[in-house]
Length: 270
Length: 270
Image: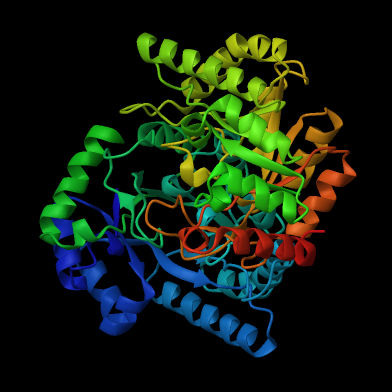
């Protein structure tokens, strides 16, 4: 099990590392902004000195802009993200691929621009030991965050590239509702494409803006154990990362939240 | 073009009918609650005397409860809805099939209970000249309103029954994001399964609860004209119904809203 940093964003990196180590959790997923604030090399040292691995870095992406200058800036920023992932010794850079540009209605064009960006970035990443991981986001984010909405779409994109260069993220929050997800996981596993597996539960009502409504494990309606068993069955060798954006968890003591997540994990996932 | 009653819920049925007729709109989609309040026979007479057809009645469904008493009540209520549809001389009863029962995580079981309910209700409806229309709802409603989330799923269910008994609804708000929707529309058209075609645009940010965020035609990112052309191309013979739940429209003069919808329709759909 790994704790994604945003699950306990109230914790500075040293406390995050210390509490995880004390609670027997072997990995953390990190985010670029807090890592940059703390210092990339310093974050790497702090986490590794605590005996933890970095299971993923969030996030690159936002590849769908059409304007050439904005596009060049996005690619440069993604190269920086790849460098940061390499410095953190994580093999996985999670991508939130981008929504529709302002005023555009062209989903197909946006998806093709993602493929173009992957073609430019994947070799650069591979040279640094980093695999790009396309995360399909729930269709409610299709217009403003990610036009890749299903695991099947993510695989259609990833499979244009070598498996060691481009993989996919299976995040229960985003894909739980999809009746084709079992087949998608099998396809991803057979191709060695599952780069990350993330957990959050689905709870309603959704909050305004629908970004911060991810539920604590067991509080919602997702068959979390079924998902864990499915990715296990298809040979996913990596960490199970718990990623919950929820202000109610951020308002609590961070160590207590990590302990609760670990407990919920035992009850609902393991 | 047809105006769904909920687009201008501020209008009583006589004003709805009068304004539509004056503005050259040939149909209305009605909802059970306001029709019951006004009187079913009286509503039928008011609308028909204005020269309008009733393009659909919303809504039956909520078939996913497992408790036998609740299930019997749901079936009885759906028979009443079918009778109301027949009394309104509409051939289409739109179904919102239901979410997961409280505490359940069993999407497959819920979907099978929908199929069981359709098997009970479809012949009853057909005898009364009413076709049941399964509406796939956006995946953000999967837990609490409708476990049928894609056009493909809706067709998988509908195709277990004769095409004149069970069809599907294509509502742009629910399916716009899906890269398989073009194939789904072709499949639905070839099978004579498109029972209703509804329009709303997709705008963000989504409001809390995500129910009342449907956008006026042209305000969002949906290729509305592409959808209209697609359903035309596969031989859909019915009305194009505009269904927008949006408090900003409800706060305005209802006749003005209908006129604006008609204008937007000409610009973005026709």
